[in-house]
Length: 106
Length: 162
Length: 259
Image 1: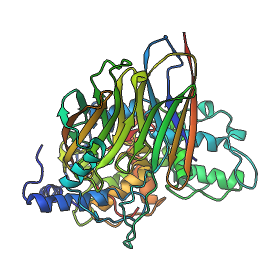
Image 2: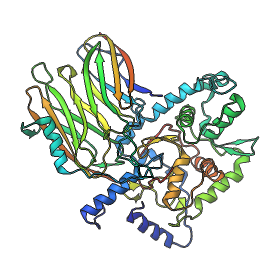
Image 3: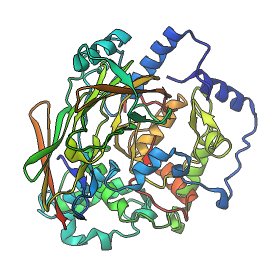
Image 4: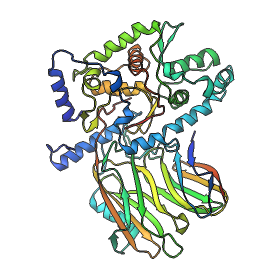
């Protein structure tokens, strides 16, 4: 049940620098914890996060176990045209999740 | 604020490491011993991996991280780089490292002139009081860095098996 | 793992023979929010950066999902939670006439699942139960707490108060020793709050997850090295009821963020 929270301004002026905030539900199990029996709890993290703006990649992050659970990532982009922002999270054990948001640029 | 000065630095680090790992326990019956202690050599190697033989200069990068965190499991961090972000002069990527977690890497962030502002925020885990280092690669393939010392305390009532 | 500093503090507090617990005057009550640093406050304030909201979203999905043998969703009877659940969590734990005792929101959800939907109860502290509880409690955000007003709850509030005042555990500490007498001082570097449960279920940075008040109480009870109570135990419900009635009038913040 992976939910994501995205914060993208619905409208922006052409050329404005806008902030995009993302929050994804994920345990980000570091792979360094052990159970009471002494066994390692296997690593289960999101390894990569990408954002595409009308198909073009504008941001990419490589994530490591040091990123907290429910990863919050915020970054900036220049609002150049109206369209769609697509977000993709990929991780261990075949984890893959996407989200999208629209933006109107005038 | 006072830290626990009564123990020697090495045993204090181990104590905090054990206690800090136990604090991460949470909902699972997890008891931890930190398997590997990260060393300054690992940090240097991780930086070399990104930077190669190029010199890394201090400057241009600002690392915003609370000097005393409320909880090492979730530490808000913002890295920003002073750059005009034009087609000719921009930041290609930002790489963040730490000194004492089991692994030296925290995250790599790839941007470009289209970003408008070279600034990334996220939340990280810090296993102990330590140094965090951020390195930016500019469009001319030069490297700039900033570092911050962070003190990590423990939550007062750490959980056992939930 | 109890830091030396806490043991020293406990020894000092334990040395005081009589319980000097003085209730916090109503106008001096402060939410745990006010003890946090600016970064944690910012995390709670923005719904798109508050990890607790991820659980609220999950709860909303569950609210609309058909569960159990009756094939009904919460929404089928309760409609839009924004209307029907407004103010509900602010008056919980509430008296259940059938059981003759107070129940928490989590227990109420499980009772409804069993009685109305023919669904098995959700496990305490499971993601689904927390998500539903967070979604329901979020509908009371900003509203003043009214729990404990029902006269039928009086004996249970008193029981909760007695538990709050009673020294327990190897460290021989009562909740009141820290939370009534020493709030705003520090324990192992962290500020001691007044222990008002205004934001539960909340996202605790320590847990990196949403959790219930019962989970937090069990941590504290373990912290003083006392025998813990099971989830749903009448003692934990009485404590929750007392703590909510002690916070009467303060505003709900669910889902809060706390270190």
